[in-house]
Length: 253
Image 1 (tube, rainbow, N blue to C red):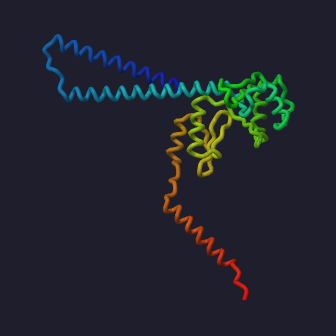
Image 2: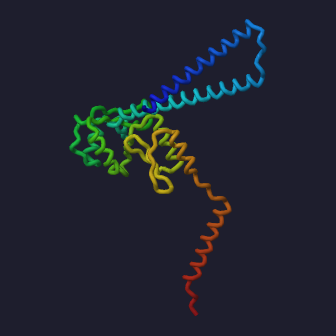
């Protein structure tokens, strides 16, 4: 039984329990209104309230888990539809994106075998024309997309950069990871965020929730205090002065 079936079965059990409890309470209220039975004690009411509170908390927890799984499933499905897509940044808005992309592929990226028919879609994203808008490139084959992604290092120093077309939630996780762990320690690969941790191990994440767990495991190192910074400066100054005295030549007689 997969996790979705387990969640569905759990929700069915919660629904059945809720209906039984409500039916029991309705029956008790009906009997109390038609008979002279004494009302329930405070202790009994407290116990039933605690049981009902626990039941509601479990139900909400199950619903939350199910929503998170469904959201992750939809996100993975959306990311799968983008597996042949790359974004090119730094292209002038006034230039024809298709022709510009082909020139870049044939020129600095040295991929002259990729021709116009290998690209399904090529257009600018967004409507803001005050700055260069990213160009969305959807390749016909995933192998061509992989080749272009592999050769992105050849664009270094050209003002052009390539990135994967992440979903909104993954993009937020990527930005959060770079902010916490550093720019050089985070990158993306096949739609997943790769993080190199302080112990030199690598983790792949997909959600902000997974990022929070990593941040808890690897919190930011405390910033040095003013006193320690001043001590380091003093030590460096002393070393420099000592070194200068050692290499200083004695005056001629």
